Amino acid sequence: MEGYSLSLKGSQNRSTDIIVVGAGLAGSTAAAVLGQRGWRVLLVDPRPSCPPVFKAEKIEPEQAASLRKFGLLSHIAPQAVRIREVRTYYNGRLFRRTAIEQYGLYYSDMVNAMRAHLPASVEFKLGRVVQIVNSPELQRVKLDRDEEWTCRLVVLASGLSAEIQSSLRLRRTIIQKNQSVAIAFTIARRDGLPFLFDAVTYYPTSCADSLDYLTLFPIGQTMRANLFAFRNAPDPWLRQFISEPGQMLERCLPKLSRAIGEYRVVSKVETSRIDLYRTEGDPPPGVVLIGDASQNVCPSTAMGLSKVFTDVDVLCSECIPLWFGSSGMDSDKVMSFCSHPRKRATDVKALQNALYRRHTSTGRSLRWRVHRLRLHLSMQFRRPNRGANLPQTARKKLLGED
Image 1 (cartoon, rainbow, N blue to C red):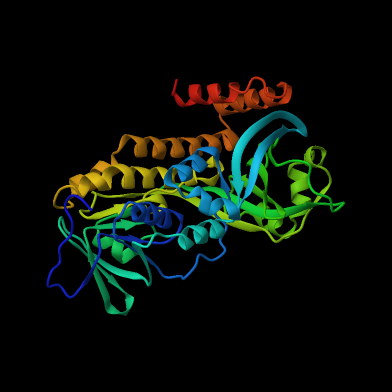
Image 2: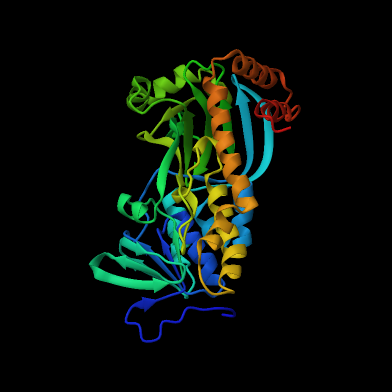
């Protein structure tokens, strides 16, 4: 590679250019993009493959565009179901049909497909990072079993242990505790026939249950349901939904069957509780955080993968080529990533959207009751595919974005 490169002649430690800690979607994508561009990368994770986990299960259009830009969409698409149209309903009534490029697949399948196509310059190491000794020049990373590696840059793409977080003088700050609960399950038609749609978004008519929306989309041969609610994890409502999903769904969304046909829940219910947080502290020299390691995203915004791919693109396409063109890896270089306008814009948008969706579904002040009424009226009386800008315009006005 051109430019400055790491030299460790005489060192007994193993060395590489970049160590990526965590082989979830953020880490695997970053390693794949860096490997394509010729960097020597060590990707470290304690699991040989990503286990089944309820996380991002749908790729949105801009996220597909990012994967296509990275040259990685072709690795993931064979594992996914292509979605070409989304039908949006309110109170059992269709009010929008949207032509779209989406993909439905389980998070673990997405990650494992990415891992299976890592470039030759990426070495996968099964292990756990137990210590990072960072400096403005070289970074020393200790794995379990007393294995040590040296590199110029460490990319943290996993949750930080308390010990490592403390050693890097970082802290995790909660922005909104009990932000939301994501609920997932599989449904089927009662008559056993296929559903007559690609995907559906369904909005509730009342804020009594603190629901945001239900989204239905295909994964494999099944119809997956993701329901987003703004409730606490120990809530009796949530426990009842887990034990009686069919009855609770009919109670909360009584006209859903009018939109999609008679249905039944055919799988167990999975849940994921979300506390919104960000990792704070002065940028440590030689160490950069991406994805959920730096700030998480409420899944109701559908921006989780957008944040991941923006972080990867900014870091791998803009920052690292510039950083490695000169000696050192000081805090100023790391700060240039943290403060990058495109990264910050995505982080801010994800947080604003998360808080907006929570207030819209649960806000009891006059301001939010009026706003909710306007949204419901616009959905109730809108002709299909007309008036689509009203909710977005009202949202911007409330948030002072216009």
